[in-house]
Image 1 (cartoon, rainbow over the protein chains, first blue to last red):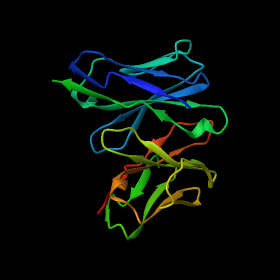
Image 2 (cartoon, chains in turn cyan, purple):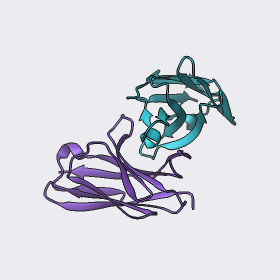
Image 3 (tube, one colour):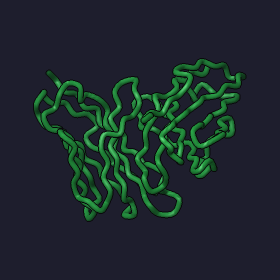
Image 4 (tube, each protein chain N blue to C red):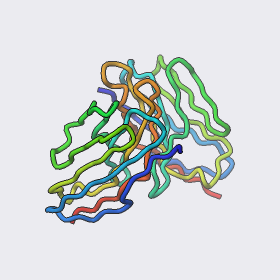
Length: 115
Length: 113
């Protein structure tokens, strides 16, 4: 089955700096890669997702890049703000068989943005 | 309406109790999911319903029993739970198997005593 590795497990940045979180996946059939932000005591919130037919996607201060050959994808947050502090999860999903619905999550990155 | 709602927010139950968790969405999504999340861990998939039919059961113990009465509602019936079942139970929905973006509800914080 799919395996997703996420690094780093914790990340501390100064307000205004950029933050990068990286994930690798094992199943070459995976073709959908969402990122979730989860604040303490809150629901996971879908912040951006990318499909394997594109290499990069941006939404304001957030961008995701995908390298299918290397099987890794990354989340980039620019001009970080204290409200970006949360746990971020990457995930991967395959289109093969009945796996469309199944998201395999990374273990999460605790991002702290210091004012 | 772009939200998934869940009730109750908190639930404390004894090991002999029977209770149910409820989830509702009015986005016209045809796939609904139950996840279990322990502290500092990612969500762990339990069940998937697609077009009101059980599509995935991730070898969940029978003390958890899902039900999908219609395309907007998803229930999780709980019976004879163990203390280790204490967790945040999250419901999610997505449009279908092609449009796979999953949106989570706020969860039910379950404590089994």
